[in-house]
Length: 170
Image 1 (spheres, rainbow, N blue to C red):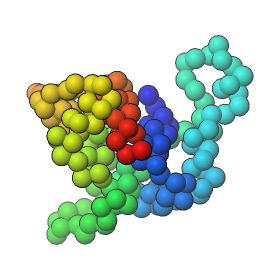
Image 2: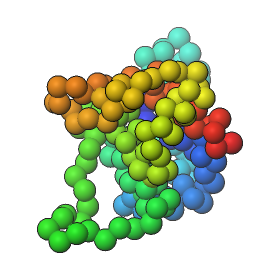
Image 3: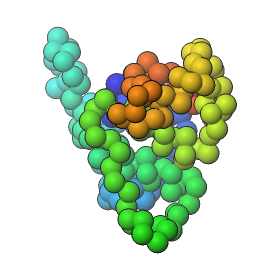
Image 4: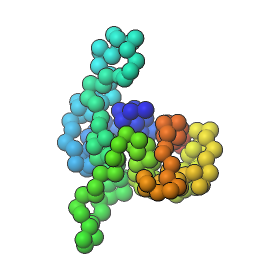
C-alpha cells in the first residue's frame, strides 16, 4: 500500500472534504491547492493504458513520506488543535518516517493521537474489520524502531485498520 492509497482510504474513512484536505496539508506545513490535492487521488492516464506493467501505479502527484507525515501532523492539529511547544522543545517535531517500512507504524501512532483513541478503541476498530489483535501486538506496533519488542506494521494491519475506521465513522 503506497502513500497515495493511505491518503485515499483516510479521506474516505474520516469523510474529509476537499477544502478540509487543503487545510490539513496547510496545518502540516505544505501549501497545496485543491487541484493538487485532487491530483493525488487520481492515477495518470498512461498507468491505465499500460495495464501489463504492474510494478507500480503512476499517480498524477506522488505523495512522498514527507507529504504523508505532514498531512498526519496537520490532521492532529485539525482534530485536536495547535499545541504550544514546551520550553526546550523544538518548534517542529523531527520526521518519524525514516523509511518505507515505518510508514504504517507512524500512521497508526498519529491516527491514535489525532482521533484521541485508546488502545481498547483501536482493538475495537481492528475487530470491526475482522482482525483480532492482542494488546501486546498492538503495543509492539507503537514501539520505537530498534526496541527489542518492536514489530513492523504490515499492509494487512494498516489496510484493515483504515477499513475499520470507515466502518466506525461512516
